[in-house]
Image (cartoon, rainbow, N blue to C red):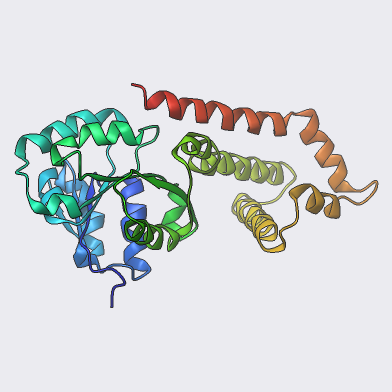
Length: 280
């Protein structure tokens, strides 16, 4: 038995959309038959059909026949996508009950409201989210915020969906670009760290696949330790660093290489770029 009765739509069936959709089905939040997905090239939606979802090449079909509509196109395609939907749209009482959910980086609630104003600006319910691709394994990190017409019940439904795929939290819209730099872009930063740790292992004679497995598991274990113990990372690091030992020597090398500053700078630049994307 699915936990939600609503039909869930995805306009755009790419990696982020599939991470969300497949995760919702896997967790039992919805049945695959409740999911409708559109994309410009129907042949690229085969994995959705393998999941059991319905696919089509008409975005308006998704908007018309679903209750919660995830907008998963590229940010620069929003205007074109909305214009095409507007051209086909026939106003109805159903519009007031639909939830439009955006995963577009840097795209503000105001921009979304303007793009979908053809659905009735006085009734339009829009939610802006910033998820990450770790949703595909049930360990996502997503923030969300809604416009003034989104009800508490609407937010509860969105929280149920997103929290089933990892961690979800409602935040002020002013914080979303900053969170994008940490959580939205963060997986790419962490993958780079995993690769570098593994390369270090290979350099010291550890077989490649083994080094990758050890590096990934080490980050997984460290992350869980932070979350489950509630200790500050600096405290946990000090617990590993024995006086005169191997770890403190390595930590010194990280400090000489400015790892901490580099990561802070990466978050800052990614946050700024997220904000810039919304102004284009």
